[in-house]
Image 1 (tube, rainbow, N blue to C red):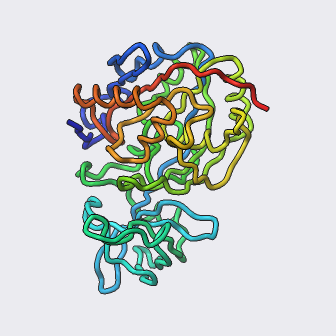
Image 2: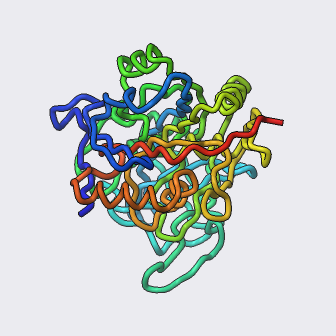
Length: 348
């Protein structure tokens, strides 16, 4: 049975790192706590973390006729339009299914947003999917400023209470831009980072601004802005050449690093808008381990996990997590996937 975490660990009498950690490797599945992470990493292993900070990306508005709506701001496309999702309820229990191109929404604070076209296209209609979920839209708002003044963190029905934006930030958050928290890094604390560094584990940073994660089964990941700096590319290449693990903290860090990966297996400094979809057709080239939360069945995140760790290891981890009552979603428990080591190739 999959149980969502309905509140942060701190509200349950725990520390940020007080969540459970399931470790899945070729040797089997182990149960531990997140503070035990240093036991499972070796000196010279590299943790890649995402420095994106979470925005209060759910902004109230009014549809024509005065109908209330929450606008989830997911990210900006190359043509300057914004990807938005419309939700109703408090928290955002249901998506809006009757919106139409050309509709203008009045936002709290006086700005507006106008829907231009369904993204990525009209899609399928029917009882299971009665209307577009994502829209490309134009706005006269400074979205970051609007979110700071009038927004709230994106949350769904399994989190009934409001929590401050600080509850949705990780210890690595520096660059505001994510619609939803890069939550795999949430259990890290300054003390744990210090312990890992003292044990010889290395850290490298990327930035990927995560879009909304409420994708339906079968939907591919949304385009997301990312940066892999030169120092990170160098560290990844040196780690691989030394035969050590490159362990991404979260699906966002994985997508960023793999978006900068070359066919040869090397990584180059990169930035832009990534549409990379990791899965059976594009396995991971660089990432050899992954720290992650727990994702719903059918989500594209599971294809990414499989692209790194293989279907057998992912299936074993999920079966054991369900049996043992691990908690799902952004405030839930964690998983460390350590697949068999792959032969590394030097960057070219």
